Length: 94
Image (cartoon, rainbow, N blue to C red; front, top):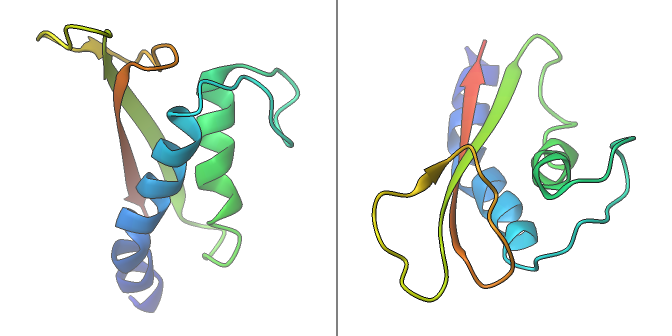
């Protein structure tokens, strides 16, 4: 139970770190063998989870709205491009 409560309390910080990377528009990072925005966003989240119990599964999803209109509906499972609005969601499964 301690892992679940710790993970839950860190969810906003993990999603925030993924979103911070996402808004840069970069496609290079340290970690994943294939460098894509999507993989780098997930890596930014993973980098913050090393202290969690290995039995916790962390899933990173995102959706984006195109610049400059940011019109609905958002593109699901699309990290978008630089200047697009993006929402990053981190889910924990014990």
